[in-house]
Image (tube, rainbow, N blue to C red; front, side, top):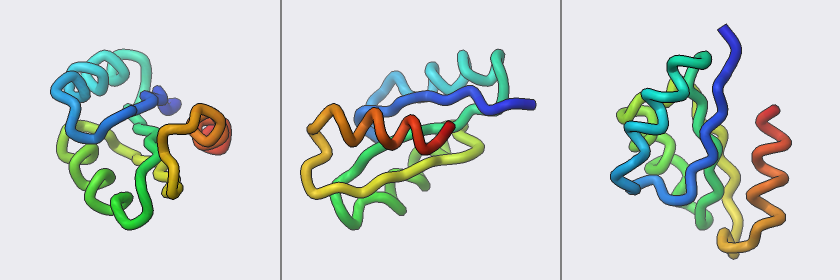
Length: 77
């Protein structure tokens, strides 16, 4: 089954579980997230616990920039 990518802005957002449930209807739920350096493993664990089968993590010093978010999503595809 193909991945259904879910672009995550915050690992602790209360709506993430619902996003993964919706993605599961389309394919295997996969999260894409950009975090601050060092926060990737904790974010991946949290998203995995919510239903992400795969988590693509990019760690950047300034995770608020849009271009790195797009680049991380593109790399996941």
